[in-house]
Length: 361
Image (cartoon, rainbow, N blue to C red):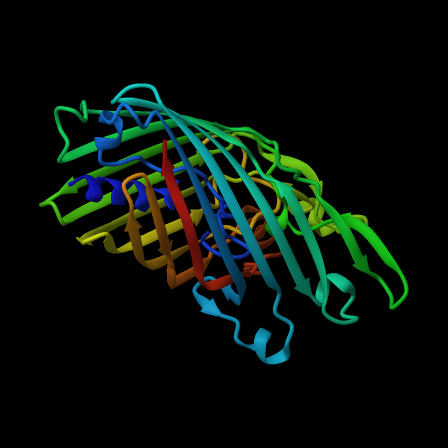
């Protein structure tokens, strides 16, 4: 049974921005952390500390408007290609069997290649690297895990700090010999520039020593409307961008949900589930103006975990099934001003790779 509990902990590492990984231009930022579902680690007084390292990578290049793929972008070679890597390092302190606290520090390395951002002179790249937005959270089990080891619900409440640079800059080509320094695209900025509140719900139910189900939900609420970072890449924003508020970057909410089943076989555990990641059009609190690429991605999420007594190693690969770039607030403003329906696009990945480890000591 203990191996099964350790599996549940590893499964939940992936749950807890992406940029929303709905993946690519709308991918959610790495949320950091995990639900320590299972409870036995809380009972084990020798494991007061836990450390997790989650490595996440994806390549986004398929453009969508709504659910319609813009295949001509790849045919013409005009697609935007993002390579995004995040290493989330999270440290947990188990206060007692019921309560724990977590500090998560993400390190990001991103690159973006395009033609349109460089006056169509050729395919050039911009980059960003550094610490992302740090998050602190407190977790508590609804039921004492000592009394209820078979099933439980965990609630987490956290604070995301604007520690990641939201105005990271690189050079854009104007001519073959001239460049201009400006903020990189929102999709590869290290942070969103806002302080956010996070809510998490993590649950599990064990049918037996080898079979169980899990579910996770995460929501980041960002009250700040815009962060003031220009979207004009070092130039002056156009009059139309100022009118529809897309001249500066938005500070969006984001959420993610997972549900699945896992089966234990010796030291190995195999899981299969579904994953929903979304960057919504409207925030729960505060304004929703400014430039954002709202959308969602539904993915099938297979995974495998190898469980040691104090270490769990895992690999999960969410595979995109449905990709949808929804109409943003600036899109709606432009539609109203011009009388012509407007909806921007976003680039998505085919899959995301998550590889990591959870260590208890």
